[in-house]
Length: 229
Image (cartoon, rainbow, N blue to C red):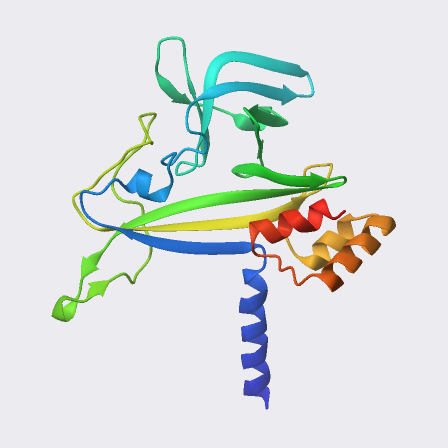
C-alpha cells in the first residue's frame, strides 16, 4: 500500500510539473537551415531589428539603435551605430523593453509578455537547446542523452540562418508564468491565477473555466482565459 501511495504521489508530482510548460522537438537534416526550420524569423522573435523603448523608474529611454530578441541566446540584441550586433549588457536595469509591439521583462532571464488583465500579466520564457543526432546500433537514430548546445558560440552574428554538417535535434521548451504588479512570478496554474485575482475577477474566471475546457499549458488557451477577465 505504501509503495502504491508513493507511486501515485510521484505520478501526481510529474503531472503537476507539466502545468504552465510545453515542449516540442524537431529533427533538422545535415546541411538544412536550422534557424529557418525553427521559424521564418530564424532564432529571432522579429523578422527584422526594430526601434525600441526602454522603460525604467528613472525615466523612459527612446533608443536610436535597432533591437531584436534572440530566442536561442535568451537575450536582447541591438545594432549599434557602427553596424555591429551586440547584446544588451544588463536588461535588469529596465522595468520593461518594448521592441515594436513586443514587450519583454527581465527576471532571471528574459520573459515575453503574452497577455494581460490587471493585476495579472501572462509571460513566457522560451528555451531552445540543440544536440547532434547520432546513429546507434543497426543504423537506428539515437536521440537519447542529455541535450547540450552544439559547439557554436553566438556572440552577435546573424541568427536568421544557421547550418551544420550533422543532423540536429532542436528542442523548444516554453514555460508560462503569471506576473503580479510587483513583478513576482508564479507558474501559470489555476490555483496561482485565483490567488492573484480580486474577488470579482475570480468569479469571472471560475465561470469561464467551468464553461470552457481550457487548460494551462497552451498559449492560446491561457490568452483566452485572461481575455475573459
